[in-house]
Length: 345
Image 1: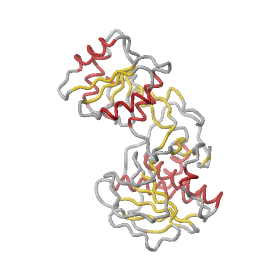
Image 2: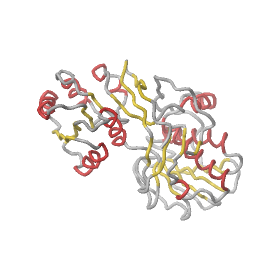
Image 3: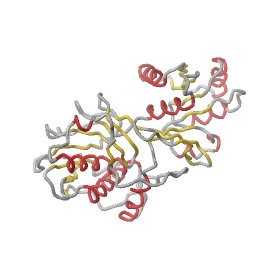
Image 4: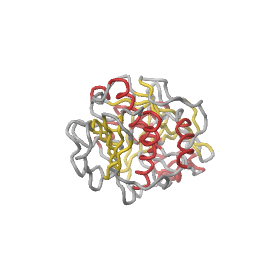
């Protein structure tokens, strides 16, 4: 596994990242540093996603400052009107596009990496694991031997997505879909009628989850409640969600970047800041080791993966990302780590 962070912090049981803050200088089209290879970071400069884009830019700039060794240029490009014409040897294009749209074709030779959970172009890659991936990891933890589990999903959820989820979890997975007006008590009775259930996983991340979870806690079987990375503070901070399990990407290396990010920008990084850091760190590491034409899809697809600030990861054949998960439990309105992520793939 390639190590792309300068070092790792000591493991901390309770970890958190702050909410998005609008920090750092304004977003401007610019080229930073020198080198024979270029990474183009394409971000929305305006609109509701600009603050998150800044966080990504900040993380990328921090990684470039510490790791580029004058081998890699970092170009900040406006997603609203992307212009690659003056960029030389653009080997990698990292795109943050919350609307999943690419507004201009990136340079043909460049590898395209989405800073989201789906590749945006043919043969592209994606850096962010999906909420479904997190749910799968949580259910596997709760039922390591394949004991029966239930997955609760709204009736609008795609059957194909749920079938794929069940296949990844393995063992016996009962899918229960419910209407918007379904009552938590009725759903709890439906789950109880299934039999000896180890855990109940939730696809949704809204107030309906709290109602259902409260009803589940009144059952004699007391199934473990499993959430995912899409659960925000409204769920994590709700006392009724105490002891629920959430699997999330390994946080053991957050501390290293957090310390330097705070020093440079005055605030904590967000998870998206870490993804910005990691994509630059991967590119810089490849260029330092193999030269200016080192960034290829084949090298990025190395099965050994990479160790980043946002945890260990590797790209799969279909372009999505596979990450190693730590297991957390909701305790006192926070996610407390109860099991570390594996050391490597």
